Length: 195
Image (cartoon, rainbow, N blue to C red; front, side):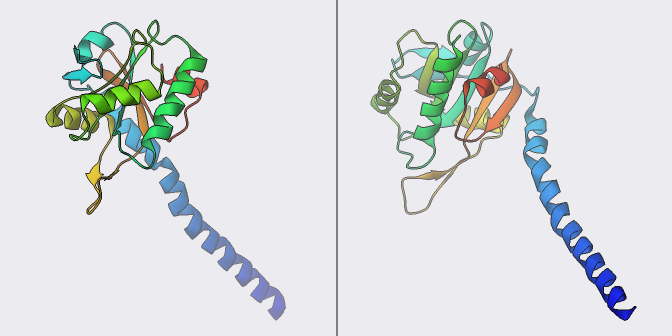
């Protein structure tokens, strides 16, 4: 009988331990959803940006015509930016509809990125000039306002020319955030889900 009591106590402890371990993990699993919900249906500040071709655009002129997918990047990123941009390109190519159904605005948050850097990024993605994918930059206040509206953040890594930042893609319709996806890999299904 004593052996059975120890076994039951041992099992009870194991269940309690599992519950204690599972509870924080379950709460953490909801964090991205809670984070996204803070931004959903919130306005994205309008602003102007300069595209790689040198032309100036206003965000509202684009989102008044069709939904816009917005991501922030920087050209010299040695981590996630280039894979993210190429993943978005593959997904957009496969999903179709770019220009007709939606536009993409990819803005550099690095004040060191030049128009030549942005043209090089657009060229590396093999973007046709009329693709409705705008690669550009804006003044710091505009970038920071957009970043804050879509849940993006960045911080310089001391002693390097790099930034710490998440990878995300935000869908904006009529000037309001309707969806945010985090990660480096986007397939056509995920792009269509955003729209």
